Structures are given as structure tokens and as C-alpha cells.
Image (cartoon, rainbow, N blue to C red; front, top):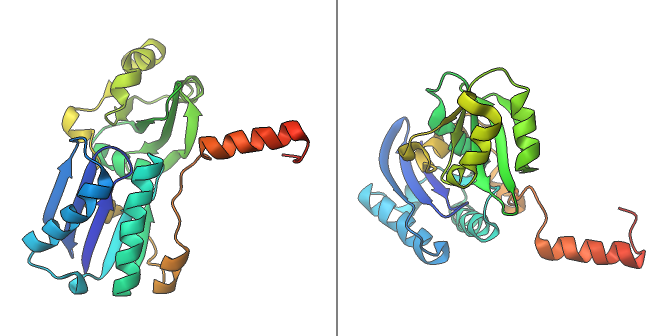
Length: 236
């Protein structure tokens, strides 16, 4: 079975092609480039290097979010378009789960971090076997660290955005907090595919209904809801 994996959920871009249990091609970069410009050429180049035509793909795995609204949307749009056109299944995987998958050799818990501004983060907690200990979500960093403090194990923090919050993390958790090495901070599409292979393969028709999982509403929608509350037009 030949898989294409695409992760554009944050600034890094990762694309991979896997045949059965063999990684044929993987390309990952954290160079700042607009995914709308770079993602599709990266897919085309990966298939070219693997000496494959799009019609030879059997399934596509995509990072479904959370992360950058624009980044997630671009990756999902590319993946949906290819899957729908080729009539092959599309499997979504949490962007946080994929990032956490880089730390499976760590003897403890794994906490992927994506900055969400204003001292908020997208995060979750996973065991090194992939079991979720805290669900994916949009958390105030203070609240996340309070939850982590109640857990007994050492915790590996993974992701480029850990650097933004590292001083605060250390001040709360001390030596229990471990920072992943730099080469584990980028999401890898090969890990995304490995995780997708463990999930139930959806029907081809399900591709049409596939949507990103942002884990928070947009600022525009939040402002609209607040205006509606002030106007007395909602009971939320």
C-alpha cells in the first residue's frame, strides 16, 4: 500500500511517501515559505523522487490540526483534492499527535507545544506508547502547566514553539521538564503516515465531509459571538 503524507499545520512543511513499511521519500523544512506556494511542488517532487505517479497512491494522510488556520486549511485542501480526484481514502491525524510521535523513545510523558499567542498554546499529553493522557486542545499555558504538575512522570516538551515558553515551563516544573533535541522539534510526515496506518480507513465518500480540526474558533467568529451576546441575540 502506498501512502502520501502531508503536514502543513504550522510553519514547518513535511511531505513523505511510504510503500508498505518502507519510507521512500521524506522532505521536511522549517524555512519560512508560504504553504500555498511550496506545498504542492513538494508533493510533486516527492512523487517524482519515488518514481511514482499520483494514480499509484492508495491513501493519503494529512495533519488535520490544530495549528495555523491557513496552514491547516492548505494541507487539508490539497489532501482532499487529491484524494477525491484519485478516489482513494483520506485519513486525518492530529497535528499534536504527530509531533508527539517524535518522542516515543523518551521514558516519560510527551507534551507537544504549538504557540497560540497571548500565553496560550495548542497542546496535549501523550504517553510514549501513544496513549492520550490529556486531550488535544487550546489551553492557557498556566492551566496546561497546572495539569501537568499533577502528573508524576518526567515530561518531554516537543516543538519549535517550546522555545517561546521554556522559561515559564522550567519555572513551574523544574527538572521534571525535559526539552526535546532540535531534530525532534519538526513534524515528520513519515510519523504522520505511521499513525494514520493504525487508524480505521474511512470510505472514499467520507473525503467529501472531511474538515480541519482547529480546536478553537477564529478571532472573527469570537468577536461576532461577543457582539451577539451584547446585543442579546444568543444564549451561549
